[in-house]
Amino acid sequence: MRDRYSKMKIQIKDKSEARNPKSETISNIRNQNVQNNAFRSFSGFCHLDLFRNSIFGIRISNRKGSILIVVLFAISLLAAFVTGMLQMNMEQAQLMKNEAFMADALAIAEAGLADAFARVRTYEALPTDFGPVSFANGSYSVTITGSLPNPSFTSVGTSGQGYIARVEADVTVDTVSYVVRIDEYRINE
Image 1 (cartoon, one colour):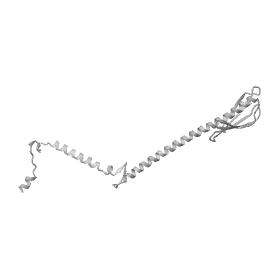
Image 2 (cartoon, rainbow, N blue to C red):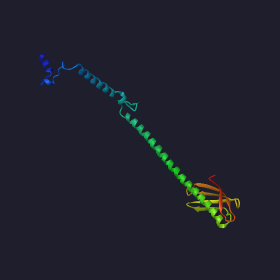
Image 3 (tube, rainbow, N blue to C red):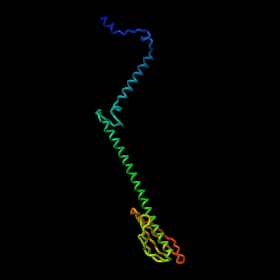
Image 4 (cartoon, rainbow, N blue to C red):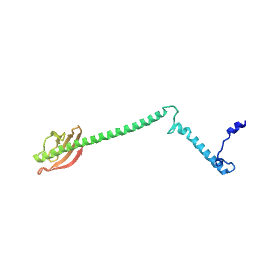
């Protein structure tokens, strides 16, 4: 039996390596216990299901591929967001094009009105209806109602893309100098 116990004894070669239990103070023992308990509680906290088996508070199982479902859900949300933003950008671009085409049609209609005023000054008489006249990749036609000195002009301009604008003007024409004064001006009414 002695041989068995002697084999179990730990051989200490240097006396400085030996631990003297009498030299340890109570505060050292308490500090070691507190550190050991803190480590145990922290390591136990890290292994809670809160961190290991959930993502963003969503509980997942330990099966392989369960994280794939969460990742696919996140990717689908991101894809929906990006698709919505692209759709909004495309709509904004189309609205800007529509505004530009409408502005072209309005400019063409105003050119028709200016042409009618030039004909009054040039011929010193009220012209008859005319149009369609090609102008700037579009066309305009002018309708004249009333008689001198207070006729009304209506010009309808069509842009090359098919947008239509209507301009109306009630005017007073000086029958001596044939200067045209606009009394009332209406757009797209």
